[in-house]
View: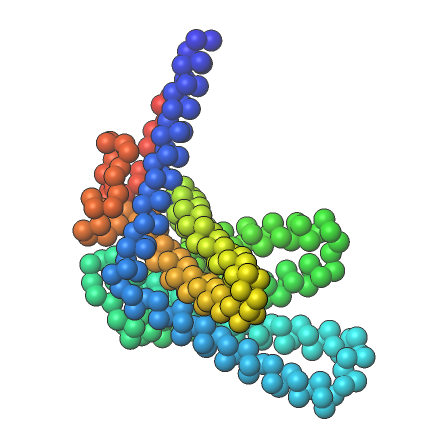
Length: 315
């Protein structure tokens, strides 16, 4: 009985140490992501270009749709025809927007990887890497659009409980495809093969991904709250000064602030995915960053070594 108790204590200590190491490493990778963006500010241009491209895509769909409803108003009264039209347009729209997003995200992740390797990335270099894999990116966008269409169709017809279940399925899918983009551009896999490989990497880096995701989420949540504070200050100032234009000024300032945060968050997330993928595959972080940013809380393992996920348990 005493031996079982000792083994239980040893297991708990081993588990806590492993989890703390992984979370700490994930937090380090979050700080590393912001450090890289600070050094390579051109990384922020890719989310901007991607956003502009997506706006152009949305407009290219809205204008023809308005024309369709003007010239074919009976479509709205035909449930069967409208349903077919809706799902076809939804699929095409999701396919195009997802393809655009993944294309520029691929360029961003490659630029971040070059920087992690000690190089000096360029926008052209990132776009060329994405262009080399455009076929695989389209194949992946096709699969993602199909899954999105199926989940959307089921969710619309499901009840309250069914929608909750579909929501969990969607969340699980998002976790499963976390590393799909680097798998596409570096391992030349797409479709379900890329999903399978992404799940494998996620199993090996769940703690780092959790630590990095939580750290980044908390940071941007707190930064977003500053915008809310600005809005309340604008309302108070507008009432005190009796001027609507004061509130309009604060509102515009808050909107631009949130847009900048969205751009920064997109770039930081891409860098984090690149750093997590590189660490999972090679066990390396980045030359010159390890000692300056990260302090390993456990002296037995260096941060530039591959994580030993098959380490023996204490019993």
